[in-house]
Amino acid sequence: MGNTQISVFRFIVEAINMVWFFALFYISIKKCFWKGEKKKRSLVIGSIFTNPYVLYFITFLIVLIGMIVGGSVLMALGVLKEDAITAETMKKFANITMLLGVVAIVYLIFLFLIAWGMSKWLKVRHPSLVIFMYLMFTVFMVLTMRSDVKDLLSDHPFWQMILNRSGDVSIFVGMTLFYFLIVKPLAKLTDRPFETSWRIFVIPPAVFCVVYATVALGILTFLNEGQLVIIDFFSILIMFLFIWAFHVIIKNINATGEAIKARDEVKTLSVEVMEALAHTIDAKDEYTKGHSVRVAKYARMIAERLGLSEMECENIYYMGLLHDIGKIGVPNEIINSTSKLTDEEYDVIKTHPVVGYDILAEIKSRPDLSIGARWHHERVDGKGYPDKKPGEGIPLQARIIAVADSYDAMTSNRSYRHYLPQEKVRSEIEQNAGTQFDPQIAKVMLAIIDEDTEYTMHE
Image (cartoon, rainbow, N blue to C red; front, side):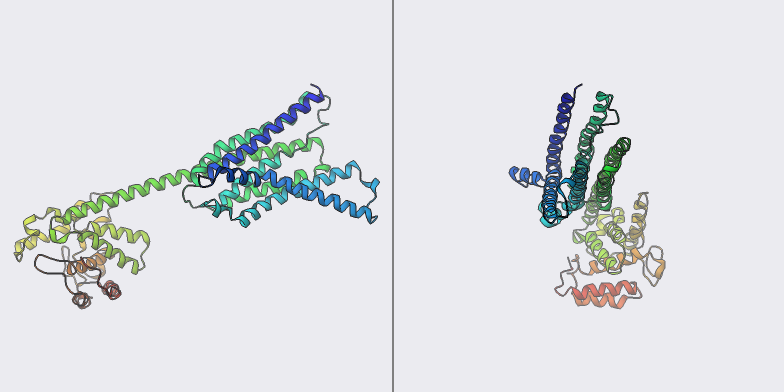
């Protein structure tokens, strides 16, 4: 194959790579960050203007103009002789220019993103993903700056051409894999929040660009042909390792996100089921409509004031929702009785904590739900039921629900009375602190009452 044919083939391969680079850059930015919020013209102009190649060429021209102006000044001052500018000198200048250009482009990307507020403009949740996208395309760009190996296989021009163009083909394949293995899953990631360190995405490609520019371009004139091939080989290998590693990272983050989403959906469904069940139980008595939900809400408020963790507060809310589930076994005529209960009827009412406990204990994945059901009628003086547990022998969750339950009972309408005045409710809780109620929990409930100056916390 003649030199002319080789040159034409080289031009075609490099032109394809260049076109593919610009096309993939545009498509990737659009798929990940430009989601119908900007006009197409703005997208095209923005993608072209912020393309790493464009910024590199701008940097290259600035450095080149500086070299020409600086050389002219030095020649005018007699510091640099015209005959001193040899081909070797120009080659070194060119290498230094490329080095400065590639290093500058990395920092220009950061400066551009900061100065233009790219993440805010594109309404991106995670700015590090924008920077990561630009840096990965910068990796592809710096790898295309490889110089052809001319002397290693000078007696075999065809194989020399294959050796040189195989690098270009690898870059093409790398860009293609980058789009399908990283950009597509990355597009899903940019649609939702996730938690991970920005360093995972930003540091590896940024370090690669700087190191490659320093090693492969900065000392280009001091390397022989074989060393150039080795550097090219390992650099391209690192590129593929990047693609594989980030594909796995993004895939795992997406998988974790899907798992969290599924968990949240199950959690939401569980809460809705529990609330529906609570409403069903409360519906047995027309005067206790919404009782369980209110008790759950008050119990969570108390738990938060006590400094319990978010998970503990949620669990207490669930226990509050189901604390009266045992009433499902109490006959309606007893629950809806408008007259004073007989001792026998009251004994039936007093069975609902144990019935509720037995029902909820069957939920093996959440055995803690039964705590509130069984012991929310215990008293700290040991005179409660069903187990007459005293003081701290009563689980904390049950002590909290007991206060919330009593508060809602006093602030709700009943068949035999209207809800009590706030002063009366406060007085009852204050007087029974240390006997019926845990003193610390009663104190928290009193503080909540005092803050409710408009008395909105009632049925």
